[in-house]
Image 1 (tube, rainbow, N blue to C red):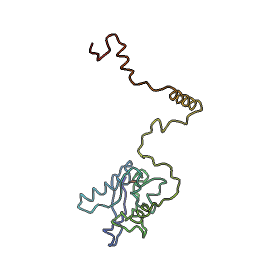
Image 2: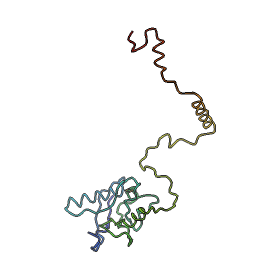
Image 3: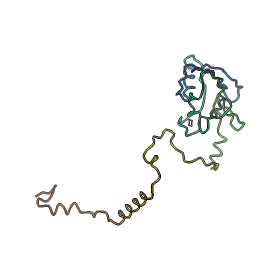
Image 4: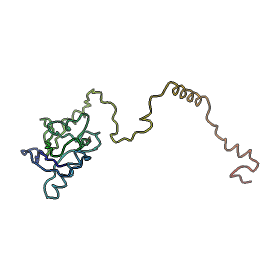
Length: 195
Ligand code: FES
């Protein structure tokens, strides 16, 4: 698909910024949004231009570093989806996309789409937290295993596991020296015997 990008470009915190228009051509629907920006940047570098600066780290939807605003919505507006997990199949051929940094006076722009998160880091450093029920942090690329897909144990399965645990606790571990006594009892003295 071919897209028109309107990207906020700002060389540094003290300079004025502006939207610059780029054409993104032959964008694969399976690319993530950041991969699409990577391709655009490769074209800019090949032409000797300054690549678009944007933040990212894990690219797996875990760290939350990739916080750009897309068409006026943080991360593009798809629920529970970070920018690095937003895929180009959510867009259509011929779309115009506006990409800008998160704008807040506490987070001044460092360059292009990158903002200074020091204010947020200070809150974290003081032990700040919120109490939103977000669930456990899962690896976004995790392959399901039998443990994660296993249904809850039935009553019979629980009873069987309890009995197994009781059996294990009631049977003492093998005593040390068992192998030595086997060797003594063997007519030839057992393996390793000198006789
Ligand atoms: S780069 Fe880590 S969540 Fe997007």
